[in-house]
Length: 245
Image (tube, rainbow, N blue to C red; front, side):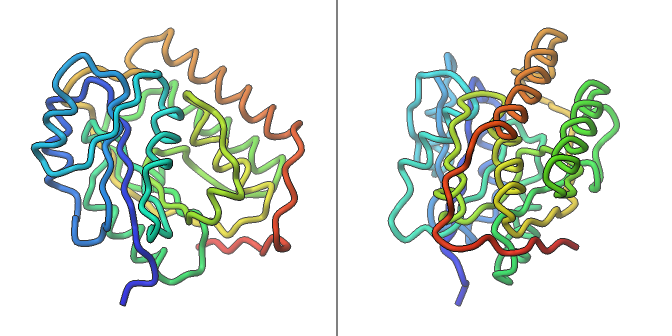
């Protein structure tokens, strides 16, 4: 028997072309619940997701973090771990299997798919993204000693850890807030190499423009500063030491 019941949350904004193929490629036998959070799309993203068999949640308030937070409010009671993945087929849904195989060992509370350590398709990560990843993960290592290489969207986190992390960022800072707070709390973390592809449908909401990339970079730095300055609620139990491979 699996150690966990998994949910998959996929935030989506105007991804009608990609969401269907992305859902078809998800290893569905691993998930008890699959949620697509339609973040105010102006196309037929929600209809395409329903047609592909996903449970669709409407969240008109824009923001990646806001969509993720809304998805979390719709989890079934039996869910004990949550995976996240983007809707644009840049992530390879087949890699969810690798993350879950590691999570099933019950040795980690957060597993992040590292595009940097994996097989990124040439051009899939822009120079601005690569620089931002290196800077942000260096700052996390300097501040809290956790060695990450990426802020990639594909990840799995336990439901108990999510409650402890108490995430708030409604926008581009969601992923780095999760990793920074996990590092501060001493949660057991792991990176798993994953594949990453160039976007073939639609337009990126972050890296597709210089302004979008700069906004995302500034938000990530501001989020790290807030995590460094703000006090964290004391966990119910002493934090356990991190284990990495």
